[in-house]
Length: 418
Image (cartoon, rainbow, N blue to C red; front, side):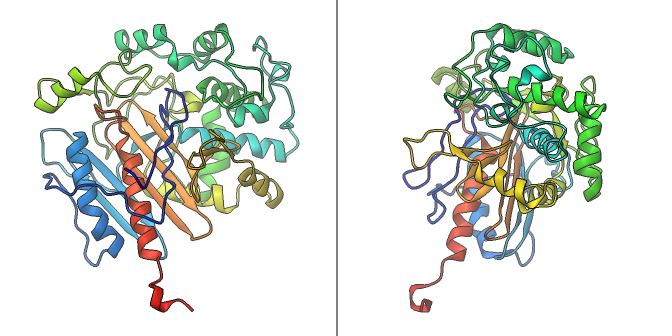
């Protein structure tokens, strides 16, 4: 894609690769091809949707992704659509009200509650994590702010080979936060606090513990009371760590390859990619595997409309006072300053071009959540696999398609300009 680029956040984890769709003024050149499945056509759909639909179908066929749902609210029109099937090998449509696992989008929930606690004077962003959690390497130097912005230098527990071996051999294991931190805090740090950017789930698990200590509630209950209940969101929640179920309606989620073979790269080997293409390699149904290892870093569940309502308030304002909200949005720093196209990471959220939000990858699901406050545009996409055999994250690419088509739809013809 010569005109639109993806930029990696350099960490495999719940959101193994956080990608930015930032060249919004041009299309992305996806080859259109026929695709079967349940592509729900809505009447009087916006022009951008009509243009995006065949590209999304082509992408799902090319990445062998069984299903996806998209939701757009924009000045150019709204669009809610389901693609593909809820169960591989069937023609069962995915309801647009389906529940799905949001992966690292959960990090924004954790980050928002932490900022609310700062606003209430219960903590300072400059506080060292050692004030709340003992035995953290460099804990007296790592600040709450550095945990939020992924600049602590702490090892990412989900990149551990032993951890991924256990995910493969014990998919139903219920992980405790102690076990996760034992991995993350026992390994050498990547760099000194604040010296660089490195995406790490360890950061957000620590922040989950801070929430519990300061609120006297479970992280799940704190998120519900502070973020979801005020908006009337009843289908958005952090599940108990021993609960692997998805509420109905919900699709099946699939994973290509093992956790070990995708520990350092989402792309399978060329041989395994070829096997997927010719059908001799099939994905595993991981709908019911334990996501307890994600906890406050990535085990959340939601629906597209509820996630849209949440991101609009998170970015547009309502959870924080005006000053702290402005500080949050102004905190974004490029993950790769040498690349002008790179994504940015902020205080518990990411920025993709003009969109603030986050992406998420968890076994069986890939999510993109973004809101552009300047144009009042919301994009929510999710797909039933975290990564295709070639490593592409389907929901992220769908979001990029939508951004390109929305940008073109917003262009003013030259003869109409003053």
